[in-house]
Length: 73
Image (cartoon, rainbow, N blue to C red; front, top):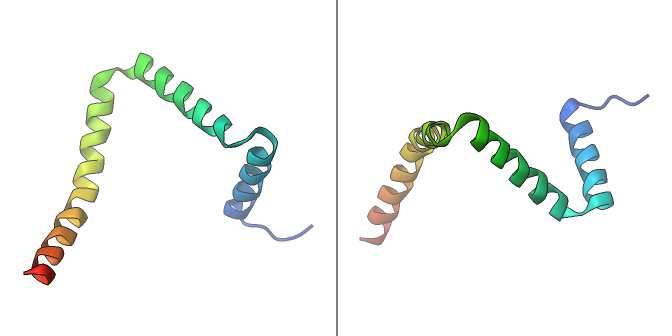
């Protein structure tokens, strides 16, 4: 038995699934999961997680925009 990290095992399993079912499979299960989450948690849930993502990534985006402005002008 070889030493394999959980990450490596997940990647290997994901590759096998993609080879067997195709990349459209992932799109379909993602759509189904999103629909179910919407039905279960509603619009407010998506607004809340969207805001969290924006707060986390927003600072980095602002930083990159500022660096771009400084480089260009």
